[in-house]
Image 1 (cartoon, one colour):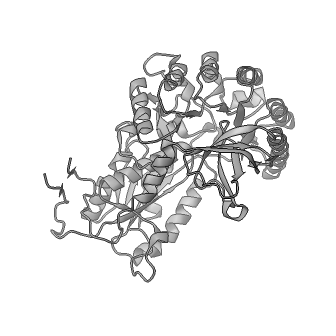
Image 2: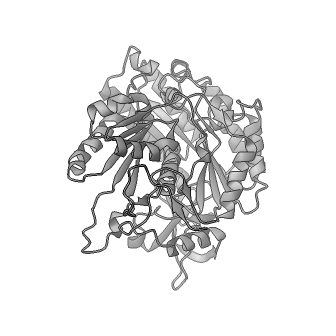
Image 3: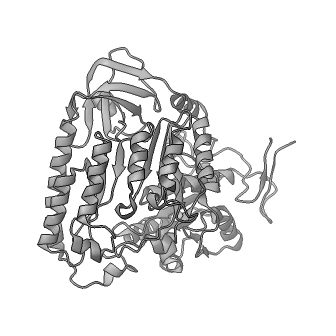
Length: 510
């Protein structure tokens, strides 16, 4: 059967050069994974990934992509300013590039909706968190109608994992187990933008993981706004622990991680599953937000300091080598000096291996944004500096304590920005610490996806170094093979002729 590509009504009969795309991602891991789906959708529709660095010398090919997609975040500070700044930069580019299109999706698009086109009328498409799969069709509709297309759905159109995906890594992958959130934290707008929690059936999750492993993936990270409430939609409160245990039966799957749990629903069965399932890694991200019971109540975080520290103690008792990370907000409305001291107390007690620390800023649409007693910026800044200094000290001490340990490091791509200068490679230890390691003289370098056995020689403030090569060893893996195969497979020529389906059905050779 010959290959046939459907073309939109009114399109030229001649085969056009493939249109290029670029996805720019802001925000959390959920957005990163959604961007993999956006890329997959566009490539499935015939677009080609834009690579400015790959443009041939002397080529007169355009230096900007034909389509730029912004996958936005509404949680980060000044998210809207960053978006409109980027859109403003592209306005003159689009003016001199007839046919260029700009699309805005993600949480900020879900929140601002038609406001984006009002403020930036050169935007062609606005789509929300519930209809990611509509992007190619919306782009074509905007081209055909010569006007902006805004489509925001109030509920999930299709579970995103059913959409085509262009995985960024051949050796590590994100796997969504749920979308949305049933919590009502007063500082967070995510439930309003992502909707109520929707869970995938365990069999679907495991089937996706098995397929990924079949392609060479060694490590998966299970994603959800609140992974440990997984199962609420189909009535199984122990579903997440069962899912972790089930991943242990997938042959070839060496590493399993997850993010993020919520302390209020984190139960002992999950700790037991982590401890008793060998491929579940000894790393845990457990968001604290505040150490003050009074502030936690104002945040509508349904746990208190004693419960949080109890979880940390149980994890450390069952998994002594676990590296625990956290999120902390400084300067929540009404936070007193005593409240902040309680946060410092918990940080000292918990001894997180690292922490993502944020200065509170109001998010329109959240209850906290209208609360009285907003903390002055100078007070928030002073507290923030004290917190980061304390956490930096703990992180450094914890890293120094790793000296002499022998670790299996999953070699990664792009983790070590100074690797060329230091003549090291980089990767992640089982507990997810970043490790920069040296190679023995004349040794064949491991590939991303291979596993290197290294001995830690120094704990630096934010990473580990392993320069003792006496016990160095490499295990070449299927993931490394997959990485090598991807390098050998050329990307489609972005300037050559290729049929473009633009989101309409395409018949391909079996």
